[in-house]
Length: 246
Image 1 (cartoon, helix red, strand yellow):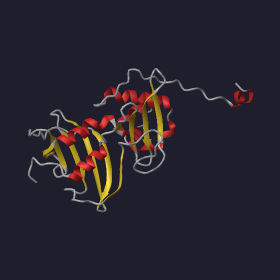
Image 2 (cartoon, one colour):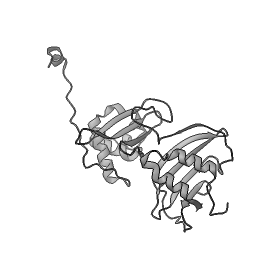
Image 3 (cartoon, one colour):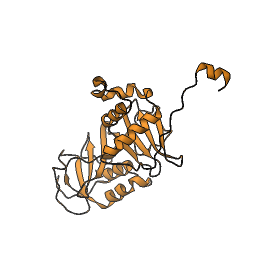
Image 4 (cartoon, one colour):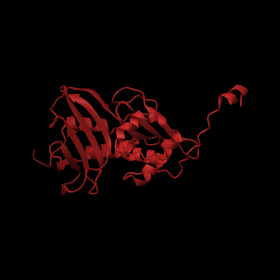
């Protein structure tokens, strides 16, 4: 394929579905998609597109930036995954189509889901199953973030209440911090992050929030956490205290 070239209407439609204009966190990405062109391919080749508003060189030594939005669908009955990434250091936008590329004209798109529209209280977008949620409050006792965990999909993210951004976070890095918070040094657990989803109810909300704050200190994309508070867990009442009403 010759570059530079314009995104096809089908590509624009799918990308704007992932980064909806009406959710503040995603608007810079949707605006960029609407005003840019494909200048070439990333190091993963076909379907790994680099977008820019101008013709510029592509640095293939750069690692793929963190995912901003991710979704899956069926196109003409074939599974396709789509991701939009952070702007790179050259202010280019990297997007990835996996499964079918180029996207066929007038495609039959079905069974689509993505994380971008999720809000606290919703089911998991991928599996329509219940989520585990941990509210992260600030000093004004308002929920600033929600840690969302899908056991069925084995994925977790942070919902930013103000902007609507759903920030996917790596399981291994977060689970490491959670185990440290709990003072667990079991090598079998550390080397098998999937066990996290078997143990989601073994940790308190305070431990989840503490691990999230520790993860944030080391993350490439940090969220504002200076006003986050960790509420002390209330001790469980003994049967005796329940009986006497104390």
